[in-house]
Image (cartoon, rainbow, N blue to C red; front, side, top):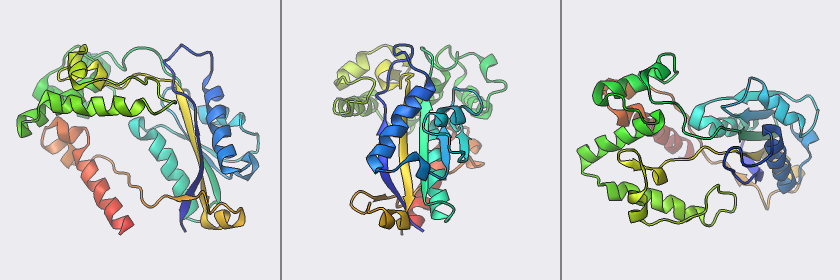
Length: 282
């Protein structure tokens, strides 16, 4: 069975602690927009996978209460950077597997100001990504910089050493992303920067500058995912967008065998995901 997105909604993403709202407020705003976009009532939604990382257990239920008290199952999804895509994948699987005809995928985050983590070894002893940081430490040591920027920055250093990539080439990616933000009214920042301006910004962890790192942010997004028969019954063919393929992978032995940050941050997973998408989409 095919799965289609028939409605989407999101809030504007805000710098943490600058807007007076709670995570359930942002979830309601995004969820209501998605349902209205689809022309679907919450009473038609059969399941709700909800993604977030920085709230307490069952925050998904608290967020969904604002959309309606219909008793439908709510699943709390916490998967770091893949959290939103995981919630969407669950919604698609519910529909493609024939379990449901209408599912709402919802995601939100309410964060604190400042970088994630502190950069000291003690932060990582019980971390789920301790193995990844161990790979990094063996090759690069630890520095007192934000740990996420550190491991990705070190992967960039390895890429520069291996392929001759320049800091300007890496900065061009950041400049391109900021240029895209100028056309997105929901983006937290909407300023364009040149490659030189990206390079001249404050260094976070060489070669990454502030303008190459994601900020902490508050906001929410939602998508209504439905079956082909739901599309037909409700006359949604003109707005239905098929999810042609998705893939999800987890680390394998290859992620850690080389001792490379490039592999530890996901190159083997990317290759496997690309293979899955290719096979799925034909």
